[in-house]
Length: 391
Ligand SMILES: Cc1ncc(COP(=O)(O)O)c(C=O)c1O
Image (cartoon, rainbow, N blue to C red; front, top):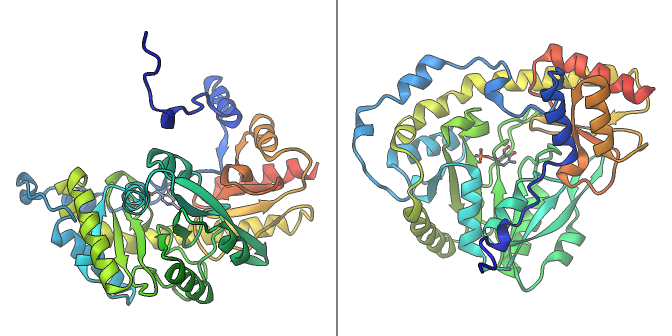
């Protein structure tokens, strides 16, 4: 008799969670709802230059197979140009292309950690980490971000979370969904910790350009204070997740960074996962950010202003301060678990929001709202949410 067919790492709870079950129910009976969780920019009414995008994929050179482990030089140069436009100089040789930031995480986890070793991740943050880590046999240890008018890293807890099996620290800059950037002082402290303890920084910068302030925030792609892997890609930078092009920028003390690049190159060579057409289109696809980012930022600001206008009339709820990104966090009275509240909002008001606990908020009383949706829908969705919470 066969005792076991599948690996323990795939022993997932495959049944949908209660909120997903409620969404499926609503769809099954044709109940329309306003989606305040939308994260797919291609379905948010953003205007793209379709002709340029599609033309860029039609390239004679796509008929030639030129397997380059780190990616075609022209594509890596296009990425280096993106940083140059931000006044940050990086060498295309320090870049490794991947099909997504998620794949970038996998490569870096594989590079740094043996099975069972540990990577520190911020909490609250993006829920995909758990799956990525499980698939790479890495153990995630959370470190808290604390909110007091703005978000900060709790360094006391972070240092206590570091143990002999720790290999690296993940930063999300700005974090999803808190919208908080890593400050200069935090960067220095993180570099010191990593240097002293022999750790690497893994910095997810997919939302880097979506700053709500006037000053752009620096990337970690040029961070020399510790071995650093900055991850980003087209999915948010050009709002083109379907194109599947991302990158890892390696920086840090010269010999460590050099060895990391060589080892990453072998990992990338094993998969060669990025298609030729998309690499040849990289320059044009990255250029799309110039029109797309401004549309999204206008949306985010408009929706945030509408949220604030409505919140001013509802004293029981408030929103947390955010410095960037695509999300707002609503603080709501705790009358029931956040997931129950989200289900009630969907069933009774026809509005979908994410409960804070999806992002590992340590307590109830938080809802996460996407700010990239169409303003009219956002306005009416927020009205329904606040009316429900006010009653
Ligand atoms: C913080 C963060 N990192 C990475 C990703 C995934 O990016 P990619 O599509 O490049 O894998 C997402 C997607 O929403 C995200 O929010």
